[in-house]
Image (cartoon, rainbow, N blue to C red; front, side, top):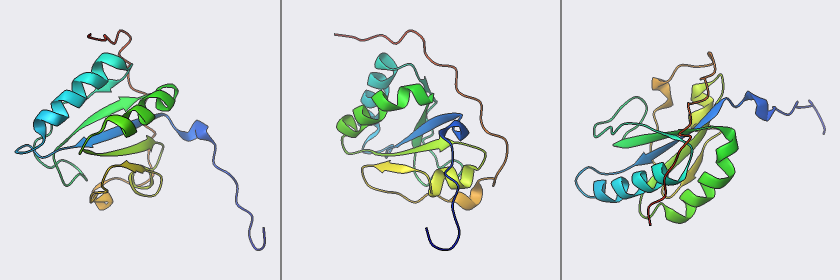
Length: 139
């Protein structure tokens, strides 16, 4: 490296992850309900409540899925294949919510606006979510 050297960040900075699943209450709520049910049946995650109105930095209706780093490798590829027409923002939870939602996030589907100015800057890391220890698969 020429100039300054950069220290690699450790993945230990990641306390947990969030996936924000966006939908339109008038046109894609049923698709979101189906996906939400499939996620809850299959994965050890915490599925958040419905937000049919804009909330926080999110410009569209959404629900959140909270999960531990150990679930990432199975859940995120599954979301890539099963999101349908829905957009999903996946981000780590570190000590900097603004960076987490903007610079360190990934998108599945179309990228939407996220108003990071409505988020706090560097602060306490979020605690890892309580996992659903008994997901159920329906036939």
